Image 1 (cartoon, helix red, strand yellow):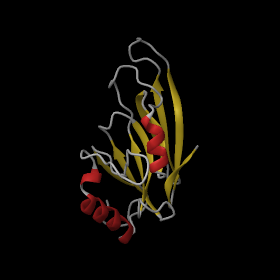
Image 2 (tube, one colour):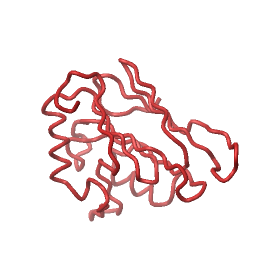
Image 3 (cartoon, helix red, strand yellow):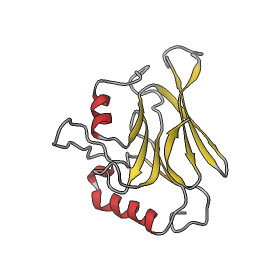
Image 4 (tube, rainbow, N blue to C red):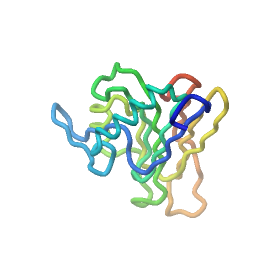
Length: 171
């Protein structure tokens, strides 16, 4: 599906964080070795290929991060004004770390250092994706307490990707 523009929505489902994540404040950088940050040439090649062949509406679906994220995949992560090439939706954790929290103190640094990151949440849950020809809506559904049977499920945040417009916007 990433070879050309024949499908309306093109998904790349994979395990580790695709977008750049700098974990340290200031001019230095600190990236995870268990993510595409450890494979810059390969990530850049794939990202550039998506743009070059005109892949329509690329959406990267990611898991195994133990937190939920929404990111714009930028042509150049170090230049916030560079074009958005794709959208990354990172699934929520299911049971990691017991009940979880909305955010931890380090998330403020991630938002400051990575303007392409639009959402972080550490509650347990799932993403409900509703896909139509004109929009892809991702509802981040969470439970307050995985340790309490029957705890209610709520929508923590929703994002929409519009056909032909890479990047997620809050719904």
